[in-house]
Length: 100
Image (cartoon, rainbow, N blue to C red):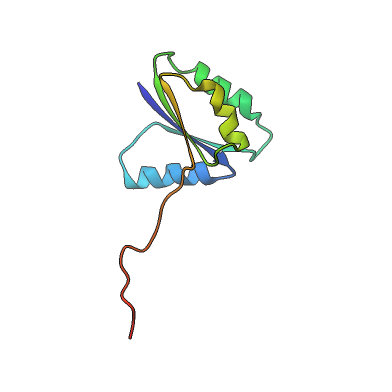
């Protein structure tokens, strides 16, 4: 089974999950909003991975390269588990006409 985890500082992960749910039909995205309460992040991540089958493919997405959230996922990288950093929701102007 393929699993998706979005993890970030504060509420970025929650917002991205909510946006993906709105824009797509993807189910089963797991979001981790780190440091929002007294939850120990390494314990939370370990418990999450303990609940997965060892053969599950896991795509882990974090907000900042080298940030504390990103570093907590590094030990879980292997042939079935991929870590992507720098997640965001790219928004820009597709087309604008200058008003005269």
